[in-house]
Amino acid sequence: MPDLDFRKQLIINEFKTMSKGKNKEEILPLLLALSSKAKQAGIQFTKDDMLLVIDQVKDELTEQEKKLLPEILSLMGRQ
Image (cartoon, rainbow, N blue to C red):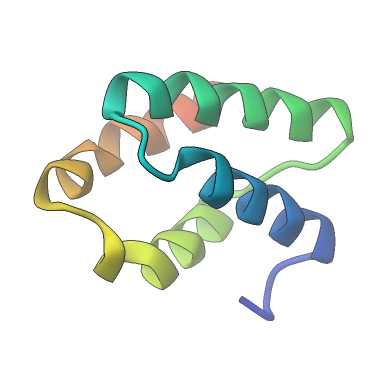
């Protein structure tokens, strides 16, 4: 993901590490917590950033996770 700011990449990597083996009920609060952490650090993910991230990881997602993407994007937009 060379198109993303280095600080954004760090947060994404932290999310990937912390979300391994978690179910959807655990992932959403984690995602929101990391989004809040990013916001406090002055880092804001645009919708284009999120689409780039999703494009990079979509092959690793289950069908159920792929179905949650619109909901997650919507929640991220409200932060």
